[in-house]
Image 1 (spheres, one colour):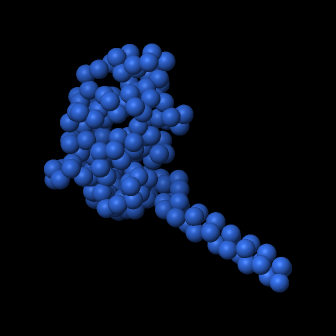
Image 2 (cartoon, rainbow, N blue to C red; image 1 turned 45 degrees about the vertical axis):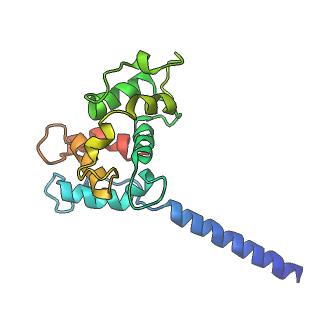
Image 3 (cartoon, rainbow, N blue to C red; image 1 turned 90 degrees about the vertical axis):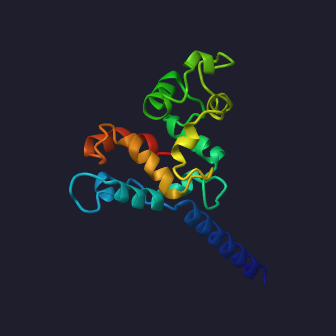
Length: 184
């Protein structure tokens, strides 16, 4: 009887680990340019990007696990994306990259002004304080419903990646941002 209980517990524990692993692996790892370029024309259009991005990355941003992103999900997701070294604080270089590519025209504050405690890092609280009352989130909310759908988030990221504003992401643009957004 003890052996049966042990085997049952062991089997149950294994099933739980498998389910948790499955739930947390909602995306294909190490996606390449070719995974996004569905028609092999050496450029990614908005529809191709939205299809792959939403299938593989949207859930990483959706902290509440509901049908949309709210401003808290969005700010947390952008903070994590800009925190390239994953140390949960933004260096001045990480801040400047984010400022240049994503929200430069939404925030007029420089690094030292944001770093309220003068520790040479921007914490999430400092980041949120700087961005919560700006039009940053609203600029991604195309239909103005105060939520970001999968397609709105993917479109926002697509247009950030499309540096030359050609309405396509080309291989050099993809490479520039691959490490940046896709490693949340």
